[in-house]
Length: 246
Image 1 (cartoon, rainbow, N blue to C red):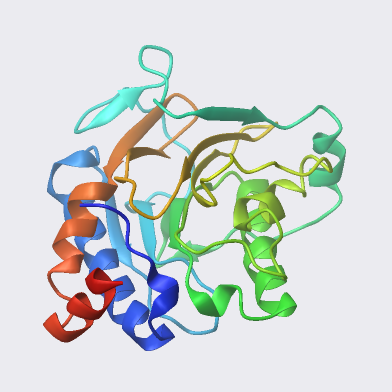
Image 2: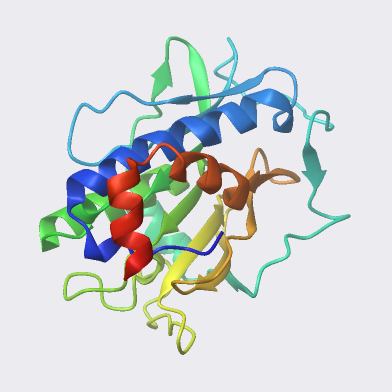
């Protein structure tokens, strides 16, 4: 199913889809994609910007060796199949060291990765974009990996798209979106020098699988297309017809 143009409907309609997609993603990850000891769950929204899906390590706030299992893929054996890969320049290490953050635990379960589906509210004003990018920066700084799905075109508050706003924290050179593909799926590996795996997208494209890193050597392939299709069926028929007739 092609990506729809969600900018033609109100934010409430996208929010309904957003919620269904979050749950579909969580179900897929918990079914067979995450290895034993890891799980995904939707986060309760306590503010304007917060991650939608969390990958957590059960009952152990300290790092443990991981050697695969479930649907985990070894980075060295099968690098993610994306169009573009970015590596933060060496000077990014200095910028990372300048900010501090206390590592957050959820009921003594360590957060190892976050997934966020960008919504209109994340882009509606400069402060919203700053909140979003600050949380992304803070997560990567403490070793939490990220997967960001941005199905909205860049606006005046996020020139170049939300990935560009995040990556400016590591590389001051602006990210140039691919011509004709203003939407973005971006997976971030929280290494000492962060890496970004980018798939430029456009309305009408099919969604790819994207990596969600579990640690520096392993990731899970997230089935964006399959879960998007499941969530689409949860959208009221009236709004599906409005979107599809455009």
